[in-house]
Amino acid sequence: MVNDKGQLYTIEGVAAGLIMLLTAYMVVGGTSIYTPGDAHISDMQLEGLGSDALILMDIAPNSSVMESPLQQMIENDSYGGGQFRNMFMNYTNASGYGPKHDIQFSANYTYVVPGTGTIMSTAINSSRNLTGGEHAVRVTRWVIVNKKLPPVGGTLENRAVLVEVLLWRD
Image 1 (cartoon, rainbow, N blue to C red):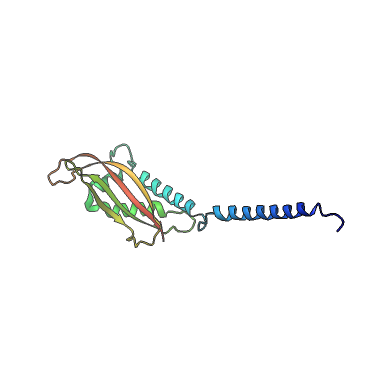
Image 2 (tube, rainbow, N blue to C red):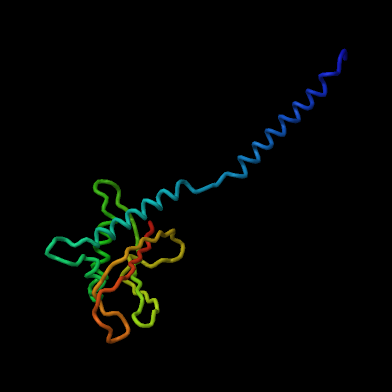
């Protein structure tokens, strides 16, 4: 060797390059979040679809009818469940010329018992029961109903109930 002054700089440059590559590899590998596809996007779409369906159900059909179908279904428990199921499924599974959506749901409404402050929940209807393996999203809507709520002998008056629907795809 004629001159060994550049040898130390070469070793230092190679070591610095390896450190930079190793650091870049660790940063990229440590901050990556792996999601199965874009699951959050389909959840937002499903939530928007369910919210839109509840909004449509809570609009009175014309100016002569003061109550929306959703209010009537909650006020009249005897027939409301089947009507809720049909109307909700028509809104959520309608797809025009595209593929049929296979959206399932489970719906209930929650209210506060007058006088006691106890929170009660009543099932409205469901397309099928949750088994626990589904990835469901929750959609809610406050509805004012004129209904007698427990205790027995309660008065008929306007009350706010929270309609909650769990939606998932099969």
